[in-house]
Amino acid sequence: MLTSMSNRSGRQVGVFGGTFDPPHVGHLAIALEVRHTLALDEVWFVVAGDPWQKSDERSITPASIRLIMVEAAVAGAPGVQVSTIEIDRDGPSYTADTLTNLTAAHPNDTFHLIIGSDAAAGLDTWHRPDVVAELARVVVVGRGGRQGGRPPAGWRFTLTDVPVLEVSSSDLRRRVGEGAPIRGLVAAGVADLIDSYGLYQELS
Ligand code: ATP
Image (cartoon, rainbow, N blue to C red; front, side, top):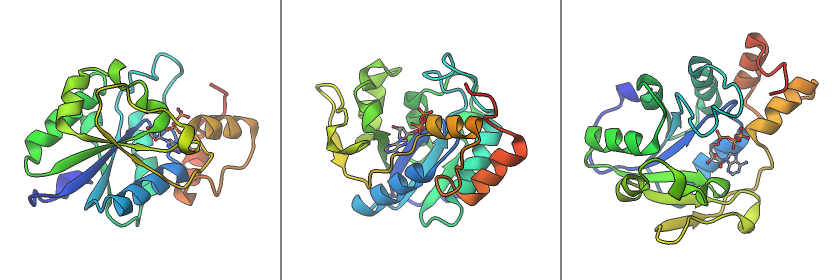
């Protein structure tokens, strides 16, 4: 957990935000690939407390359960940490607020915001996109190959190829609801938690 981390200066840090409902092998593959390709010191999974872009569409698993699933998903992965910064904060989980808080807490570090290409095209619709652009370098990872979306005009970004893994949290929720297997698509510890909490039994 990040609360135990030192404030050593000058790190290159990937910030990988998501709902992670549930976290899957695609998420971890992205984090590790971007860390390797951009030679980042660390990648922090930032678990959305209130994912405002998704919470109107379906019911979201409580943040406390998504957090322990993410911890299980990244256990043992080198250079990968889990941040509770958005869970600890009240209100909608705006990336602009997260980057503001992270920059204040770690002023010497450089933050790289990792987003899927499906999310890139909507960057202008995010809360305070000017703050996001100012406080982080945007890293767009391919989802579905090179045809994915790009940030709107005016955004500076790096495009990074990652192994294409056709897995999504929504597909995993659907599979659980249908009784289809998910082991291999999520870490064993995540599958165990989904079983023990009885998550996703009803299609959302
Ligand atoms: P859902 O299917 O519920 O929308 P998701 O699988 O996209 O969820 P999120 O928690 O929303 O999971 O993802 C966090 C980030 O990871 C987003 O930027 C998303 O675009 C990206 N991402 C998720 N899965 C993949 C994947 N297989 N390949 C590339 N990017 C991905």
